[in-house]
Length: 309
Ligand SMILES: [Mn+2]
Image (tube, rainbow, N blue to C red; front, side, top):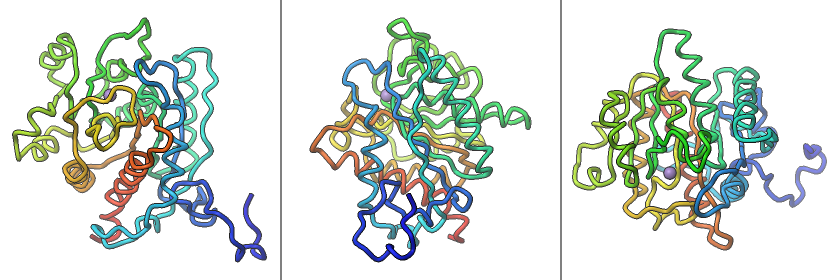
């Protein structure tokens, strides 16, 4: 409930919203950003626990400083509304993804023009917002570019019998969007062949990023004007985020990934973002905090232009 004015001065804990913002700072009709938690977990293959990801991100976010020294501003000033977690009840992943698509579209309709950040949950949920934006832009004759930060290409036609697995999420959208995948370091021979032959899937292997100083320019150049970012936290190095189902060595580090994101937000229209696959390890707060801060950095970059910087 909203704390009445007469009780505001008492020692309440921060609310369990993103950044612990109070209700006034985070009302949907005033906010520039909407946080949509989707704690969906059905097909994670190795280590489980992504269902607890959104809650851990929100909890950790309450301890983030609102001032961003890189941007010399408080990005939270745009207003960040946190919706309740979305319960997907459908019988099976296809029905659940249908529910998520309906919910995502409804949120965009209720809060037009807002920057919606989806918190997962397993990676399979990302196809719903990606296809929503692909449809929206296609109506205007434009094609969506997806910037995928990930250790894996997720291009398997199906995995463990399901075409809606986390390992198949990009296969579900590859015919509708251009894919620029960054940090890739675990894929099948078939996935590599498919990427090379496609013409619309560009892989930036972790191996190459570590050899080459110009990779950020090359990534930006491959992206079209209209971008959606799907950020699988296993794209980051497991020394930073061990809390994920399939931790692969050799991932992206904090400052390089921030440099990439800042460029992308500055030079392209980023319509939406999801951050998926955090599987919190009890007692290990640093990865949860890192992921929460990563989201706040993206919000800052998204609105940095609007603030005149
Ligand atoms: Mn992955």
